[in-house]
Length: 270
Length: 318
Image: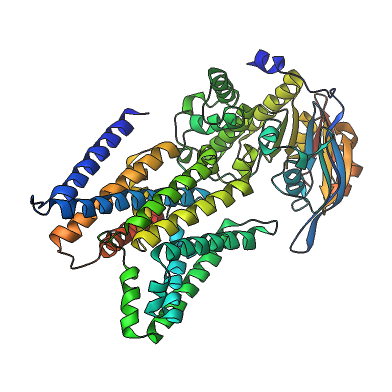
């Protein structure tokens, strides 16, 4: 599959260029501004973590970046073109999003769910190549031995992995995940972050994730975008953000930083 | 297709064909042949049309609302039909029913019901936060309003005039207007043509809005079109035989129980077959066993209601 993916046409953008961008976007719900005039860009071929306290507007921001939500003002640009200029089926081959709460009302097996990821490419008739993507996504998420189980028979974490597998099967250049580590144990959290790292490094995918555990952001991402009260609190390379001063500004907490195996680990237990 | 599915389809097809044959030929004498057969044929045609329209519209309604215990009657479509009929008699007297030809009445009801569905949609989807549950809630309120208005007018009018409305309050397959039958077939075929390119979205729509949007479905457009289609199908079947929307809930859920799949292609065929079996069987029961002592909708509502309670009770256990 890896080859398959590489053979596909590369977009004209070089790794490192700004590929996904919002300019002065705002969003209010019932008169309350949740995102206030935010402008940020995400580099192609990188993992960007969105961090910040609860209610900072991270989820709203990435929902707007992925068209799940419209924006009140400003612009959302994907590879330089406004998101509204894309047709919805084209966009589904380019950008995928997984929200944090995933409840579905129909009875599906893991395999059936993952195969929905191919819908933008082949509608309901999956080709052999499509099934290849499905198989690979199942293996990536270590779901092989439960692929024929129904979703309602799985634990929260296993379900979460099945949904991530669906997004992987969708095989888009941009993958947006809203708290993908929810419900996951340490082993699977780490393995998902490693998988994302691999997708990014080997296949040039651009990945945006919302994470709550700052150490996952610190150890696995290239860039960090920090939000606070609907505004941009900080943005930059991972190592520029992970320092006590910036973190204090974001979280209003004293956070110590230790270096372990060349990784910066934040110690926030006070 | 799975083997079990094939089996179930075969059984349902055999069952519906034999029920239809029974319905057509039971008690026929050579002398009554010419008179009875065309009449019965019309009833069977109406049953197939109405059964399919109700089953299909309920199935897609449940899919777009992501809820399997709803029917389109919840947004007040069939109470609107009754209101239109009552208003006609209220304002024009029994003359109203004569003055407007059945075709005009039929088309007018359809137009009003589709407009109402679009109004509901426009009202709720003009803002950003599209909430399908809000649509349902407003629909329920409107449905109750229409029902109360109808009752209000019904108590005011002449008892003789009330009788002409009463005939339309209960579903009946025994007196079908041939011209309306043809009109219904044409309208439904056009509707099918209109919705056909969107049918491929149904399986994915069942995953809910966020996943559907992620997978590239133009959600708002698709929902709007399905609502129009549902409104047309409900109005055609209600105008043809009267309100029997509860049937949809029953047949779609029976089909879901029998066919363990999420594929709408399979579910739609299954629901339509169950619907035909239920309607032909029900009509036979009403005409032959109970000798017209109760209207068909009484049986459907009774069985449907019992099944609904069963669904709710089982739902709370899980």
